[in-house]
Image: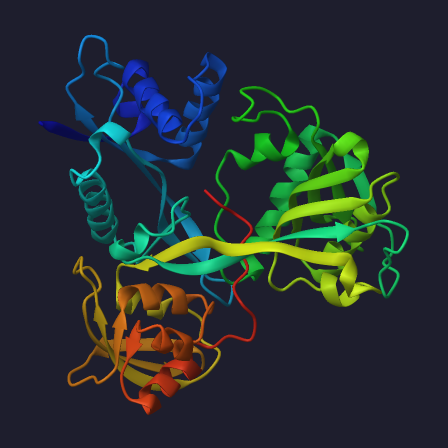
Length: 416
């Protein structure tokens, strides 16, 4: 079957083709047909974020969905990742990846992914990132799990208590005010947390309740509150809604620039009348909450898993912008089936900054997936060696482990 591959920005095409692409994404993720307002809002969002859309198009029969609805979709935008010490590195963010059920196993995803990664590499981007709905797909394209998330439930009944009092500096916010406050908090968070990924435009309407794409309309159940620092400026924000006739509260997003703000928001949530349980879908790995509870059994972890995946495109540049917490040196060879990051490299770190040069005779080998998982400090090299993603002499694995080790795990609050 003849497939026509097209790549365009929103300004390159008319509404019919753009709407057809949007319709294909909804089909791929099991959503209903696109409504006019949802399409208008989505178009404004992708223009703001600077998306490029790729599509695979096949001839459509008379009774089909039409020539403007692709059988495969793929979107990219350039946003930033905090690679340590406050450095925000531009990276290729990938999202809205779909292949229609009727056109699978024809190499469409391989073609779409290959085109996008090579384009990003040609644009001098050293990293690519994505979130996934199916964990078995993206490792073969060189992506490794780089940040994780934890789901939890907090019993806020009569026995809920923190081990210390937090000065109450939380105020409820209108939807419009919550957007401005959350942006301010996120800017601070993004600049100070290794592993943070830039937020896309859809976060503003979703977390304020202005618009929910799953509902195809506003979500009037969303409430927002803001934590104020000692200077009166926002340093924390939470969006939530009530469930189970008000006895349960679901946190949509809790963002804090520091531990005091985070615990202040938890103290606020734990004091809301009639609520017996707070459900959170993304508890940060560095949270102080379990240690600040008078009874740690009030917090129950209900699940954990991957959040964002990272793919190194340019090894010297990617390592050159990473902040290292230990000095040292090691040589290694990267194996990359796509050939983008393949090569042997000598990594020398002095005063936390890296210099990378070509190497020969390296005895240590890394799958490019391993480099993605090591990069932000999520996993130790010894663990990856046990999994077979790193091979070589024990002393070299030790050196790799020491270089990439970080005091704290990466923290990310943004999906896409």
